[in-house]
Image (cartoon, rainbow, N blue to C red; front, side, top):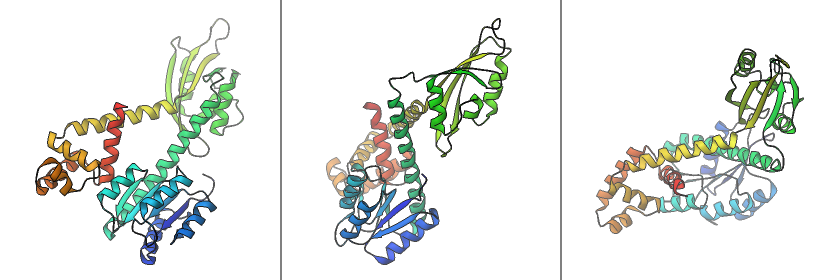
Amino acid sequence: MNRPLRILVVDDNPQDRALVVRELRSEFQTAEISEAVDQRQLEEQLLHQELDLVVTDYQLHWSDGIIVLNRVKQQWPDCPVIMFTATGNEEIAVSGMRQGLDDYIIKNVKHLVRLRTATRAVVDHAATRKQVEQLAARLGLLMSQLRVGVFSCRPNGEFLDTNSAVHEFFRGMGVEPCHNLCALFGDDPRVVGLLARMVESDSPQATEIDVRDTSGHSRCFRLSVSRANPAADANRIDGLLEDVTQRKQTEEEIREAEVAAAKIDMLSPRETQVMHEVVQGNANKVIARNLKISEKTVEKHRSSLMKKLRVRSVAELVRMAMSAASLDR
């Protein structure tokens, strides 16, 4: 992102608003932080500029946090929203999470550090998600072309022949001109060593390397090389180059979902029932009535399952349950 981060704080309490702005300033020193205390200011901010983060209270004199959430998502669907409030409850938290809320934090002094870490986490996640979407769009444009880079090069990486996909990879990484394979990887020793070994080897070799482009975005390339016909040219190496960023991300999401599902499988049948009730947004007294147990028993099971799953909030629990459920889709 070339421009400063743009953050909007929605809260009609001046003291609370100043507190949130102070914490945001400590985490995002160069951010442009705006404030909205009523509907008119909210609309002006939403229509005036693209936002990268919104932190909102729930109980507002003129609205509530869920309405603000939906309005933000309507205007800027990819903008992360955090609810920082002292007047909400778990039902509101779950409802918000299901409607796209990124995190829900109880407004008190103990949670100020968590506010900072949560805002950083959701901003970084949004940036990663946007990067993936941009990569997907770029790959979509290349669907009609060969999506694997094909090249021949010298042991020092100097290109002899390349197809258009190789040039696309270089341009996508912000590396120009496209003269040497090693330039794409910042002269990574693994690439240099791989090419050097190919001079003496008859066995094809492959590796996957993570690399950051000039904007700091991470991508992963699979590099496969083999020695060309030594009789024709002993110093010629043929290779394939493939961007596997999307595949790696999908694999990581599946691994996270499998870990979440494995953790949930460790719960007792009753803990699992209580977890599903909590994820549905039900309060303890409602859960007790639905499961025909006492509220104290519900509290005991909730405490136990939160410890087993190593989650600290309902928001984290909802995310884990949704991740595990994604394996069934």
